Every structure is written in C-alpha cells, then in structure tokens.
Image (cartoon, rainbow, N blue to C red):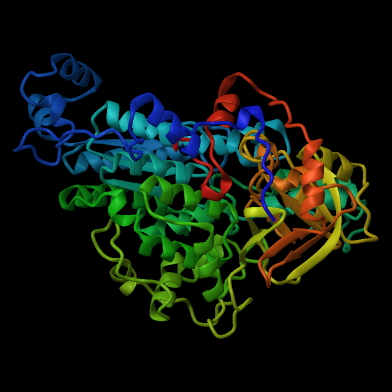
Amino acid sequence: MALVCRMSPFSLNRQTTTMDKEDLEKQFGRTPEPARYLSFQHSKPGSGLNKYSSTLTREHDFPAAQAMLYAAGVPNEHVLKTYPQVGIASVWWEGNPCNMHLLDLGKEVKRGIEGQEMLGWQYNTVGVSDGITMGGDGMRFSLQTREIIADSIETVTCAQFHDACVTIAGCDKNMPGAIMGMTRTNRPGIMIYGGSTKPGYSKLLQKDINITTALEAHGAYIYDSLRNPKDPSQTKDELLSDFERNAIPGMGACGGMFTANTMATAIETLGLSLPGSASTPASSPEKMRECKKAAEAIKVCMERDITPKKCLTKKSFDNALVMMMALGGSTNGVLHLLAMATTAEVELTLNDFQRVSDRVPFIADLAPSGKYLMKDLYEVGGVPSVQKLLIAAGMLDGSTITVTGKTLAENVESWPSLKQGQEIIRSLDNPIKATGHIEILYGNLAPTGAVAKITGKEGMKFVGKARVFEKEHALDDALNKGEIPKTENLVLIVRYEGPKGGPGMPEQLKASAAIMGAGLKNIALITDGRYSGASHGFIVGHITPEAAVGGPIAVVKDGDMITIDADTHRIDMDVSEEEVKRRFESWTPPRMSATRGVLAKYARLVGDASKGAVTDLF
C-alpha cells in the first residue's frame, strides 16, 4: 500500500529531504554538500606519534595550553614535546553494576599507556542503567545516551588534540556510542568491554538465576503462578524478593546474549577490541591484563595508522552480522550496527541483516532463549573460538584488519578451538535453527521495515486480534491487573514509543518478560519502540515509520487481524488501503510530551529507526 504519512509538528526535523534541498537551492543557489566531519590538520612535518597534540606542544605557539598541561601533571619539556597524548574515556558511574568498575579499568589502562612513553588522560562520559529504568520514564533517556557518549568522546578528543583514544564501556548503548565517537574523529582507537557479570544464585530455588529470571518471575507473580514446586510453603513474595536480592551478584553487564554482549561480540568481530574482550568476565584477572594489552595495541595502531574507519568496512560489518546471527544477538544490535555504519559512512541497510540471516544458522544455546550465559562460553573458548569455527566454515571473512595490526584470521589462528563435548555452541550441521533468528519484516504495518526476533521455538507465523495500547505504561497496567486473557490469540500493539514519539524509543522488557513469566503463549508483541536484548517470545519492534510521524501503526484499531509471517517476511493488518486513508482523515498527531530539555532536543534531531536513529544527519 502507499504510505499515508501525516507528519506531526515535532517530527519535522532537518534530516536531508527533498524540501531541504529545494530550500538550500533557493537560499544559496546551489545544492547542499555531502555531510562531513570537521577536518583537523596534522602538525607540521617531523612530528612523531604526537601528530595532533604537537599542534599545541611544539615550540611556543600555544603557551597557555602548555601551561595548563604542565599543571595537569606533565613532568618536563621532553615529555611535553615528544610524548603522544591518549584519551581514556570510561563510561563510569557507581550506580550500575555494568559500569561501576570501569574507572578502575581506566586506571590500569593509564598505567599501561605511561609505560609505553605516552601521556594518558582519563575522563568519563554519562551512562544510564537500563535495568534500573526499565518500565519507567527514566528509560526514555537511555537510547539518547548513545549520542551523548559519542558527542562527549568526539568533543574531548578534538578539543584537547588527543592523538588516540581508548574507550571503556560496560552497558549496551555505551559501546556503539564509544565506537561512533572514535569513528567521527577517525584517530587510532580501541574499545575495552567491561565484561559480563557472574550468574546469580537463588537460595530458595537453589539454582542459578539472572536479571531475566527476576523480570519473568514478576509476570508469574502477577498471574499468581510463582511458586517453588519443591517447597510450596514459600510465598510468591518470598520468592520474588529472593530473585531481586540475588539475581545480580556484582560488577559486570547482564550475562546472556543480551544487547551488551551482542555489541561487545560485534565490536570485537569488527576489529576494534582485542581478541577475547567480549567474553572475558568482568571480575576475572584476565580483564585487567586486557587493559595493559590495549595500551600496547593502541601504540601499534598509532605507528601503523590503523584508524576506526580502516576497520569498519562492508566486509567487517558483514562479519559482525554473521556473529550476531550465529549467537542469537539482540534486535538492538540492528539499530546500533546501522548507526555505527552510518557514522563510518559504510552502506548498511535492513536488507543486509536479512541477507545474512538467511545464510547463517543459529547455533548458540545462550540466554535469553537458551540456557547458557557468556561466562559459560568463555570457559569453552570464548568468542574467538566461535570466530575460528566460522572462518574455517567460510562464513566469516578472516582478511579484515583489526587493532592488533593483524587480520581477524591471524588473531584467532593460535586460539584454542571450542572444547570437545561442549553443548553451548552447536555444530553447523545441527543448528538450533537453520537460518538466523533476526527477521526483517515489511508490509502495510511497516512499509519501511520492522525487526523481529524469532528463534523458531515460538513458531514462524502468528495471527491474532489487535489490542492497542498508546504507551508502554498502559500495557504494563493491564498486565499488573491480570487483564490480558489466555483464551485467544492477541497481538498487543504498543505505539507512540518510537525515537520521536516516546520520545527516546524505550525498551519494553518489563512487558515482554511479564508475558513470558505468566505463560501467555497466546500473545505476540509489536511496537514502534524497542525490546531489550533479554526479551524473547514472538516479538516485533522498530516498526517504521513510527506512529508519531504518521506511520500506519498509528491507525490500527482493537480487533483488526494482524498476521506476522517470518517465512514470507511480512507483517500486515487486514485493513484495506482505502480504510487506512479514511482513518488517517480523522487522525491527529499527538502533542509532544516534552518541549524543553534533552528529550525534546533528541526528538527534534533523531532520525528513523530503520537507519539507526542517529541525530547528526541534518
């Protein structure tokens, strides 16, 4: 069908459109130039690895800058004039286990850099805990931190004339934000992943648990089915309190193949972190040793001029997609990889995800749909062992360059193969699913695309009646009251939660986990917002165009029949094109909930989810 798109007032941002080009031609008599980043001249010939910082430190061109650097701790003129300066950007703050240890990792990086006769300057960027904000308005601030992190790293690197950058990230938006910031400056850069947490342990159930266990237990709690079959005397309140107290034992990101581990795996495969970074646990001594190795590797990158854009190629992005499909990565990986590719000026589209998903088997029995965690994968060889398997099978291109100065294939050549007898990674001839779990859907509900996570365990097709919720909190309220029945197939639609409409495109793990925990197998979920990497079930997110800008999801009504078909890559409502047009005649764009502050600015600038929801494509 033809898209009927009545734009709401706040959706008219200055992304490059036909009207923009016409306006520019009228005003300036020329077509607009391609988007570009600010270009920095190197210092004069003869500078060494300090080719940017020497702009400030050579001779006496910037005496105030040199005075400030001496005051900051530069010991003498020799160090000032000859040592390269490396920014160490950690997404550190105390209120989140994913991030609370990153300052200490940064200190270890600084020690390593100083041992390489370089100057290391630590600084922090902001972070938001998805686990803490999940299901509340605080979650609206989560995705936009990706842009703030990128802006922060670009700002400090360029303003302070750093020669290179080491970023240390712990949670999911942290990592693409760090890569985007380094890519904008395109100076040598490496990312260190803070690592995963250990599994928690329920004292009452006497078994391992994690953050998803706690959220799904809430669904069972609501529908009064939370109990311990071994000890019926335990109340549901005692059980839920036990999960809340013990699900996360300490520092590190969520342990399953959720968004944090999806992005860490993708970035390691892209070549921008050291081999093993994605699977090394946060609390292991090896993670501290990685910091020293990163300090050595950043000097190699500077000597050989290995910059992010040299690693971020179409081949390396294809490799990242292969790993994402093989390991069952998060739908958020689609959004973030699109954004990273856009920043690197590499052409990557939704159709590339489907192309790779069609040819790569899903082989990892990892949470959320499986039973193992990243620490289990680490113990049988980790991410490099999986890369080694897929290179040997011809599914990964081993020729791509990495921050070690070696190719991906050279990095894993001496790495041990996956341990014999392990059950975490299936053989390629016995996959969990013959193709990938990510399905890109189109149809009269999503003319420009939607992203589904379908492992096959829930089937490949779902048909049900629409039940519409204008915001996530409305669905949460209905679930809390036990108002979602088990008697008929329903497609629960949550709209006005996209990048602009949310604003902020919040994750909706609270609802998806509650549905799984309550055992509501008659339910599919679709939204123009996002789902957490910990979500599983029959779910479709990132529906574009979003409701707030006049996408068809805005006019779905209760009772419309919705068909989600992964085999044909379709998502449709049984509503004619004429009826859709008629409904839009009475549709009014919603008022924006915030007209001042960071969310209003974000909604004004952010682009479409099908292109990564970036904020700098004017």
